[in-house]
Length: 201
Image 1 (cartoon, rainbow, N blue to C red):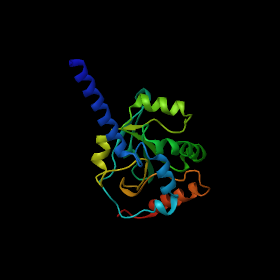
Image 2: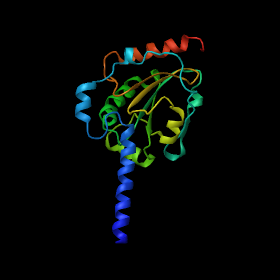
Image 3: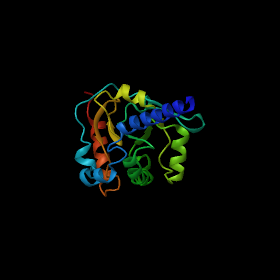
Image 4: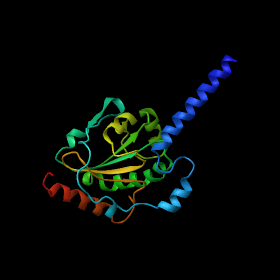
C-alpha cells in the first residue's frame, strides 16, 4: 500500500513537471502538426522590427561545459539576437537545424545567442551532439531566472528576441523563425545595424 502511494505521487509529480514544461512550449506536446499548419514560420522582417524598449536590461549569466561562462552584460554597446529554446519543445527541435545552418553560414557577422531554457546542461549537450548541431552553443538558463526577466506574460518557446545596445528588449516573436530564408542574414543585419546607429532611448 505504501509503495502504491509513493508510485502515485511520483507519477503525479512527473506529470506536473511535464505540464509545466509544456506551458512554455509554443504548441504544447500534442499539437505539433496542427500548429505547423496554422501558424507557419515567421519571416525575419517585419516580425522582429524593433519597437519601444521593454523590460529591464537583460543580465543573464550562462555557464557552459568545462566551466566556460558568458555574461550578457559583456554585450553592452552591441545589439544582438537572443534565441530561447528547450530540449523538450517539439517546435524548437524542428527549428534548430535551420538555426544551426544559419550560424554556420554567418558566424560572428550576425550575433545570435541561443539559450536552452529549463533544460539541464548534460541533457542539452547530449541533445546537440545527437542532433549534429555543432554551431549551437550549449548555454542554459533556469526557468525561474527567465521568468523574473520576462514579465510580459507567460512566454512560449521557441522565442526570438531583439536586444538593443543597452540590453533592453526591443522585439520578440514566439514560434519558429525563417532562419533558412534567402534574406534572413540581410534582414537581421538591417535590424541590428539600425539599432546600433540609433541613439539610446
